[in-house]
Length: 267
Length: 158
Image (tube, rainbow over all chains, first blue to last red; front, side, top):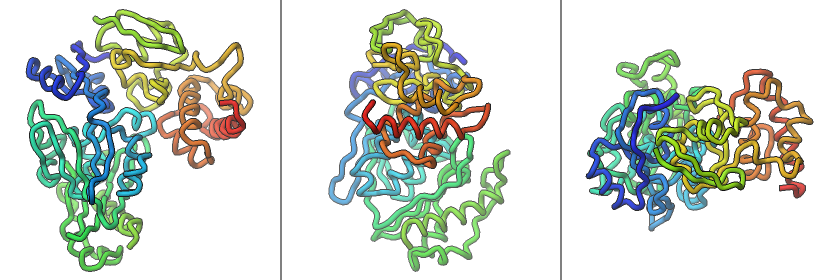
């Protein structure tokens, strides 16, 4: 399949990427391209220009500062998965990155690209929301709670580029997903994180966008165990229903995945 | 249109191509390296896997211009001096293929996984093959071939 015509520009730096965008405000930024390129091939997207930011070294890094893990937005899933720092600080995040798509996709796809796209079934949004991450862009910092605003929609403005993501290091965390065996996207994925300030539970794959489950969070704050959330029902109303799974089945999967994540986190 | 230059299987190449040309079409139609296959053309089947700067990627999900200046290895670049690569040899000996359509991608994925993971058990191999689809016989002999190749290469022949 061949996309519509477009002009390709390779950004030499973050500043260069912004300057290129100022000249062509209909342009799209190309990070890993593992969603954008298939979408363009299907001719569901038709940007006149692509500004390639995938080669920017300044966006690809992992470091720990105090109690925060900082990951550059251009860091590939594979590099997050095998990073010694990520594995030490938030092993659940390394594991999540290592289970996205397949090895070839993980060699291209990036953290920033996944967050900016906010696919309802993507894995990273669940981690960002459950860990209470802060998303830093070329213009400001945005709390994960304010970042994901709907299906494929985020708080990002036109031309705004995610530069890094700050993950507070939790006491314990885990991610459990029930994936579609063909696409590896989550039919339901639940990220659970426990820190001094409380417990956060974020769900991907089940709704139109990633969401938290306050009832599970307060129950887990009192007692961090799979039993504590046993009786909590997840409302199927408004959840996704498609050929892969009904809303009721997804609601059930959220409960099962939440319990598995709590167990994996070491309840 | 732009002139794209890269190194393919150790040889510098340069060709004029549209910005929208996918790497797989550039390799097959402009360089006539037709060993890399187009299966699903939707990033799922892995028949188009090649290595770009030492990493396995799906060449149907990457524009040729993105590989400007890169080192690309295709299935044609694995055999050296008329001698098959150990992974190719293992696929032949273990009957790791039937129709052969998925094989170039399977082998490129296998070479990449063996490089990244010196210790490979059958479960890991199956997990690592999630992005490669075979529609003939299933995966049993493909897994055996990769396991065999991994053992041989641990012996030194990397």
